[in-house]
Amino acid sequence: MDYWRKGLREVPDQVWEQRDTEVLLLADNALTRLSARIGTLPRLHTLDLGHNQLTEVPDELGALTGLSGFLYLHDNRLTALPDSLGHLTRLGYLNVGENQLTALPTALGSMASLVELRAQHNLLSALPESLGHLTALRELWLRGNHLTSLPASASRLRELREVELRENHLETVPAALRGLPLLRRLDLRANRIRELPDWVAELPALEKLDLRWNPARPARGVLRELARRGCVVLR
Image (cartoon, rainbow, N blue to C red; front, side, top):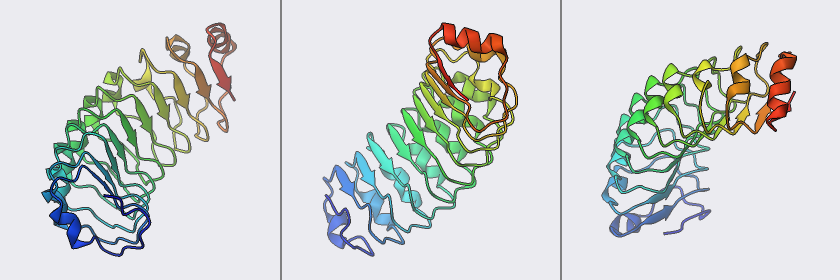
């Protein structure tokens, strides 16, 4: 069902009567609340609630265990996410960017099928240690938060290809990224990084490293090794 940009202020009752719905698009409305009845749509695999005015989402969102595609919650006014999201173990893509989140739930680590996680432009100062359980994760987008590090468990994210940490409060390159075998692009723009550790040159798949708007002065040996391997370094 497609209700994109329909000027809604609340979800029509007829939505809850369509139990066979697989895709529900409610983006770009003026929704301020989401009924607990959302949990009565067991066949949903994609749900778009982006670009609304939601301040919370109900625990019943976790009842949508059929969600295997996309869950968009970006550009709302959310300050927290329910632990029940941990029940969405088949979900592949989660976007909670452009909210007012100060933390992600520990239950995030139960979402074992996540391939892409977007949490840009929130108020996150740390990520849960359970992040390391997301072993299928390929892309992690965290621009515009207050992060000073990544949890040590991130070293287990062996499928990561792309990490965006632009506009955070990092003073060092997160050690948890060391040795990730498939990491291709690492965006560290606009942090407080002063030194590039030698191990960055040992990342076997690295193709692009963006260090712009940091005070970092990388050692020439590190830069030479990265260049020899064909890695583009922007600084």
